[in-house]
Image (cartoon, rainbow, N blue to C red; front, side, top):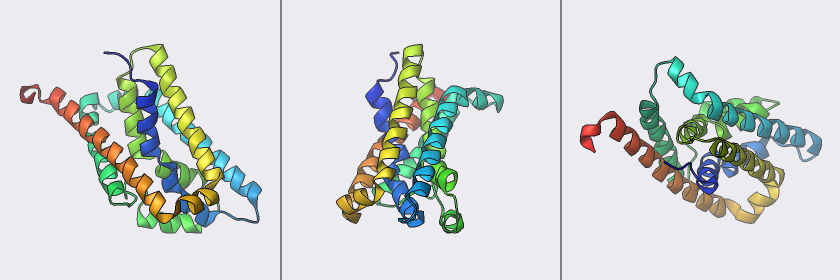
Amino acid sequence: MPDLSFMHLLIGLIAIVNPLGALPIFLSMSDPNNPDADMRTIKRSVIAVTLILLIAAWAGESLLGFFGITIDAFRVGGGLLILLMGISMLHGKQSHVQHSPSEANVALEKEDISIVPLAIPLMAGPGAISLVILDANKIHSWSGNILLALAVLAVATIAWLVLLIGEKTRDKLGTIGLNIVTRIMGLILTAIGVQFITDGIKQLLPGLA
């Protein structure tokens, strides 16, 4: 089976990381009078997202093996998680899998939101980690691993740009524009989740295929 293409990896990651979804939290905590502090927050958050996803790609499957979890069982569970996130986004909402109301309240009281909740769980949450592990499982060459790493770096760069021009992005797209983008990303995630669940069930229950 050939490795996944760069665009396949990139589109899936953009949809699930969804930096636009992190904008409301970031903007609510940013200080227009202290741009240096905002830049530090963005930098730390993007670095954290990159490291979390790269570690998941390179060590995730080994960690599953340590706990005795098969990749097919994880494919069904991860697919269900991604599916639920996608359905929530189709309704123009942010999934509680990524960020619960109680976590949102805690975030408003934090001085530094760069790692929690901005990097994890908002951008590099359980869904993103699951997607990266499952994508890495389908890759069987060094070139494929390099493409996955490049896709992670590309998504991190996009997240950096989105947060950097957060005010302009929000003003340009408006609430309706942000909701439209969220729903499109949700549709992509829903399809990815269904595909993962189907592939996992086929392997776990071959008699159904």
